[in-house]
Image (cartoon, rainbow, N blue to C red; front, side):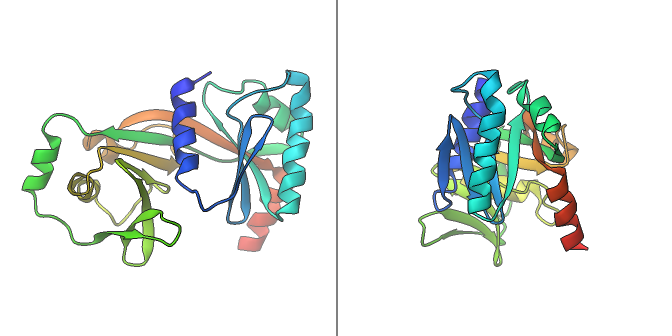
Length: 215
């Protein structure tokens, strides 16, 4: 098992306390908008029981009127990917998680630059601290950790995020970068490292249905 990746996935799940979380035979289920994300972090059953647990998750997703999506990180769940494929699932999304840790004198170097006023920290009613650009949420803060749920930020410079992080006591950043399996250059330039990649599996009929709705 890829223990470091599992620990990071647990941290990411915990950053959304206002979203309902269920546990199904060691798999974490998180209701996110129109999706029921399944994080198969642990096993409490044999390989032969996996199809049955997939059906359990699908039943729960129907109760929520949500699409069931399995998020599998690299070097884990070697059998689950093939079983999902045999049960009509396909890769709907892939990506990677990048990690940044405060090191050396980078904090001092960042603070020498002019602080950017575009990024604001706002606490919601749920108690979650959000990093905002105008009315748009680009990050979730918990204590010394910042998570960027959409790391494909086109209009925000990474240097701005690092300066904001240093100014607000953040020493670690995790960025979910969809559509990439290797770290983008602009992340490498600011000191990020590749933590792990992941793939999201969804029923092929559901993927096609959602694509038609978008059209």
